[in-house]
Figure (cartoon, rainbow, N blue to C red):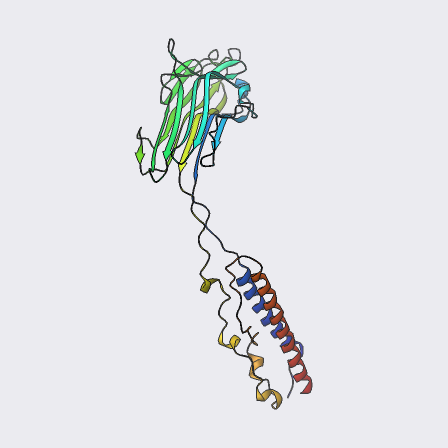
Length: 356
């Protein structure tokens, strides 16, 4: 009877052994995938976040920076009274007037972030473009605050953002909460020689979450700030449009407080899930040479069925759900056993074909 090419049985054995090694090794070495923490207890505050667009008619160049930062990510650590070192160079564009407070605190009893300021001005080439200033004859502050009370007393949270009587002025015009459209002249834009009548759109919006104005039960987080954004359509003295788009995005007094509890990582799979998959029946039995292998030259059933990489170690494999070196040792041992059996099987089939 013609024999099959000698290389084919070996290829089948090698492919089967390789598949068994890859499958088993993947099951042993796959790491647990614990869920990320859902939150945490912290507070933060920053006095100014400034974004300026590139607006050549106003001699304004692209800029982004933050000034007056505080952060308290660790429970019961000392309060952070603010960093005013200004590495971003915000004070090259803004002057801060009067008292300045940026503070964050994080304790088991209360978590809060706070900013206070009497006034400030944003300048384009030494001329004020946006001003936050007290009403004439009064002393008032820009004031933002976010607080939460953690369990077991809480959760409670409150937030507010207010100017307490301060005026918000853009190009010399007072703006109110909401969106305001301003008709401005080149002189009001401090560019009388190049700009004519133009239009500015100003959005002045306090942001408060929760927005109830007081302690809100059942709430774990609070945040507050004031956004002042200015866009514009700028025309030259002949009435030709020379710019349209964003000009300034100014966020004042951004504060956050969170009393969310850190969640523990998800438990690793149960022992029944983390152990090596249960071998199929053909893998649990030690293959017994068929009588046809020593008498009948026709291919034995073992040639048409993928040879089993058994026998399995009688003691089972260490639980791969735990950390440490035992899982790696078990993997290496399994690879060696399977590889050896594959080689023995290939050699046995090769000898049998040479005898026939």
